[in-house]
Length: 346
Image 1 (cartoon, rainbow, N blue to C red):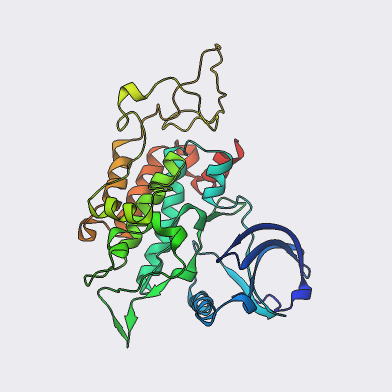
Image 2: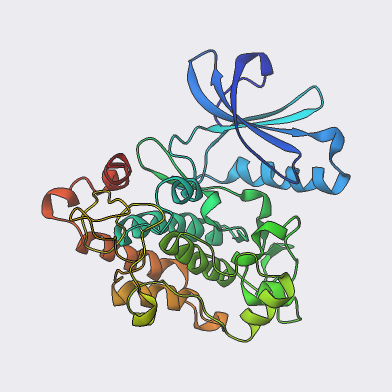
């Protein structure tokens, strides 16, 4: 962690920007008084936490001390103030990828934007897996984007070490605690909870679900009862990207987009309204076509058999090629700013 003072008086709490952890956590935008820098402060009411919850939080702080990667949320400080645990992290001006979907891209993002975001996620996962951990909570709300367009993975509370007595385990069996809200993203082998267990490939499945979430504007299996969701996943039901190749032509009827934003591959980044410029109704929001390569990427992530899934390394290489193939020579030189350019357009 950076040397930020562990004193609540050094932080001016501003607006509340979120809640979580069984409604025991309040997330504030705050100003660090010594420098004037904006930060995020998570305040957890420890008096309302069980001993198990406290141990769970300690696990997050433990890994945050020795995890260091450009695509993991940097922790500034952690300390106790009265009856609260304060965790200070960098402020992410664009919020989470889920925030962007809810406010600007309700029908999904463009392929280029998704490739850039998912590449950052896979870089973080590659590091986490190399360190001997499984993340177990990859989803759009845990993907944060800073003012300069950098992608950060959060949600370290659910991390699980695969190292025991100095040896790396082949599989683990622990079911993530406080995971009711993350069930749609969990892999079949994590949900199944059998003797075969699971490994880091379970995170790759979650990447595939997150890709569908970013592309379609909603997470697969949303609002589905947990038992039905488990059966669907165990029976091999595989979500997909919604476009002209996966939706029957008769269903692609004329229908205004919910977001009013064009999200198709290769299309301009100009906003559209519910009606076209000639006064006719706008096309169906999923009347677009993602590349065969991107469909294949999602299929590779969502293989029912974890042994058939790729790991993070080849997947992030593929996404890098995907990003470069969409850029002109001029944009390739500043590709780290692509996401900012894309978001600022809206």
